[in-house]
Image (cartoon, rainbow, N blue to C red; front, side, top):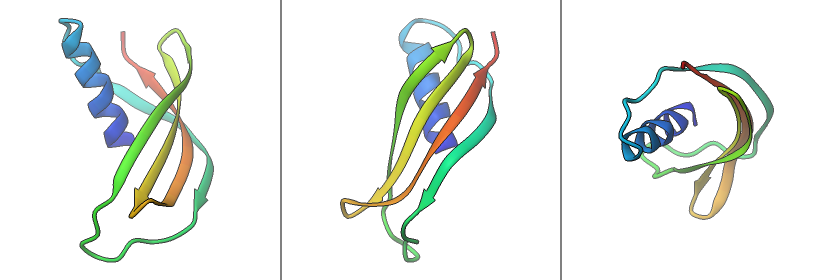
Length: 81
């Protein structure tokens, strides 16, 4: 999920003509693991921004396999200015 966040922030920075910034995980909360995938499974991860305060972002992350949720959590991401 953190890699998906980093890729998303980097993509958005590039779209705005800027350089990707460095980000740090500030906190992980509300973790729910419902299932573990088998080796070689294809996993789809979705991150949804919930809130932003300056350079701190709260995002919800969910990982899915075959339409079933495997993992969900909230991440606080601090992005360098």
